[in-house]
Length: 295
Image (cartoon, rainbow, N blue to C red; front, side):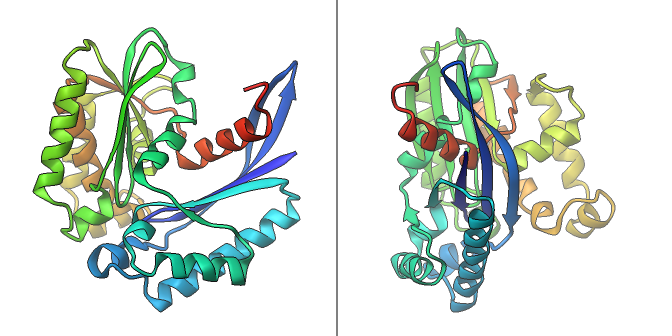
């Protein structure tokens, strides 16, 4: 049995095809195929509040390819969600209609709160100590989702219009940063010893660059050192000397700034990076939908 997850983000679109495993009454999944296409819908959405015809055509072609792959892999169920860029584009629903008509994929534009819940559904916290306090930090191209939980229970969650593409386009607003600061301050003041859980492509890349051993958290100081190191290179040299992909080399700097700022405000000294994200949460959501008695 196979499920598929499609995440249409502000920087990239992703398809995850996962094998569903049933074992002694429990359901889990194993990643089979992951495809990422750097469309950068946010460049249109955040500057013009409109998805251009060119980007729409590229998105539809990507969805047609995803549809064909899902058919070849005999995917039995899927979910496709679009986040911040499509939320802000005034023609977002028009693009959704075209995706349905031309690629036969049902696409839903979701609000930030639902996006945070899906990311939380990835169950990244299962690999660490549930008795402690954690702040999920998921940084995307258009938004940052924060979810605080204590002893395995979700305490507070909110989405903010602060993201890497938005920052590169100078579309992040001071009042939104202030709102994030207030949210963190109000919801973390009663908790001590909060650790971070970082999800998203940028923190995964930063973790690899840190050369930490698997399951070992990255310290706040190491992240700051890594940020200073990366920022000492020009964009061209981050690509040619450090070997970063072109669509990663620019966004990784504002991503660092967001993670560092959130960790500083929350008093977080260490961040775990379990290599899960939106698509993992979508697969888990599918499992919970199709196996409600087990999950």
